[in-house]
Image (cartoon, rainbow, N blue to C red; front, top):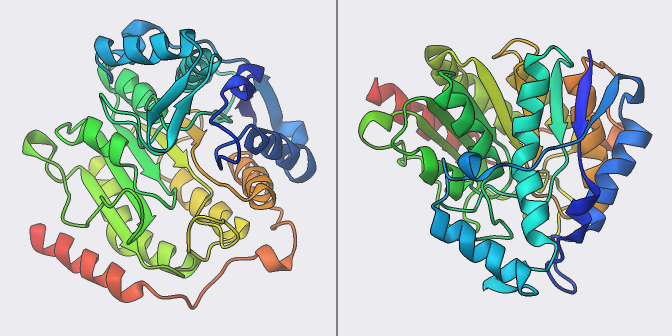
Length: 339
């Protein structure tokens, strides 16, 4: 199968500050991973088009966007305790938000079977009116909101180690989008309890799976089987958008989970079963060990292409034996009692 690969040199112009973990080298690691470990013959370049104000304002108010653009245009500066803007940030952010929209349009034209958007800055912590956690614009929310406005039923699977609080906030009252997050607990930003399930018409359309430090791939698959799959089957999504943060990898310097690139491949393959080819978009979020980022990106693109090659080496095979199954069972029981 053909995988559209969307990235842009402007992403390198977003500078978060010296020694900041969200650095341009992350994108270079992804590109290296695609060349060295991905199915190169299946990858087709796709240049993103910047999101318009109409696209962005489905998620973020104009006043917030004006502030981001103004700070970037005036030379940059600190937006919050851990998020910065530079002169190139606004262009990078609008192109990052537009990558998913560009990918959807190309997939609808039949140009590929799936898309991988190697973007930065990441987006899933950005709330409607606040930057957070290295994130400025909620990239995944922008594409999901556009799809929902066109009558689609959108599944967002977020397997970044950190809870996607911004994405959750955007769709917390919205039954058109099923937001599912697998994340370490406790960990920044402190949200994502299993009791956070949505509100009003969106009640039941937010699913949180907090797992403890050290959780391994078998715990994630147990969560998929017992909690996520029943919700997805009932929702019957027409599009899948994955917030692909690779900081759940066991080498990541700022988290404590136990996954490998092999686990990310297996989890992604399971998710692809939920929607047909041509309706699958993966967008990069976190991941701060450069080797792990390369391995995971190459492996996930292989999964999107239907490639059955294994991980880069045996040490990156699927993992098992870590803690968390009991916690998943608690969440499964919680959802059974809601039915």
